Length: 218
Image: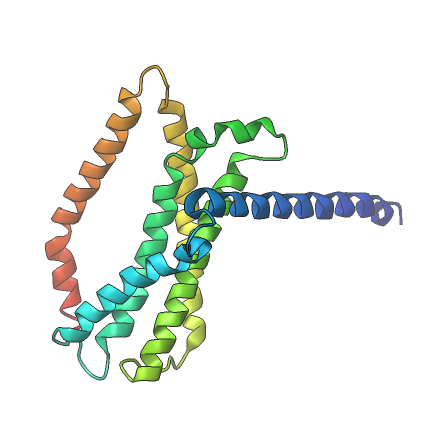
């Protein structure tokens, strides 16, 4: 009985800490929305419209091109699924690069941690891309250019990509924060440029292996 009674205060402290952290992340999400999009014109809707326009353009390009897939696989849903996941991965990691340096003043509040800031940005990107994907896929199914998914729960695999994006973004933000110095910004931007060049070379090297692997899908 003594052990059970001793766990009750610990559980209440954990619930209170979780509630505070959720409030902090929610407040950071609202701040990020206001800072990034403002309240003029369509404001916060750009969070959904920006990935929607990009994904719709990619889907239309594949819809007007030849079908490289065998069987009844339609190119539009493949393009939407692939590009929306790619946008989530790219945006979460891209937004994490300067997150700590640009919001250093927020850390004077003891309830705000770097993890809260990175999580808020990642949740915003995931939410905007997810809503855009659902709207575009619903429109594609309604117009007949895509078939309804037989196993909708398979889309939950995108959550794994979200966790991967958050983990990589957190690691990148932590490493870059150690390099940033307002008096000498050369190491910071040199590292960013080196990473971009390395990724470009890696993609160039992987073109032929990826094309050979895609032959089995076509």
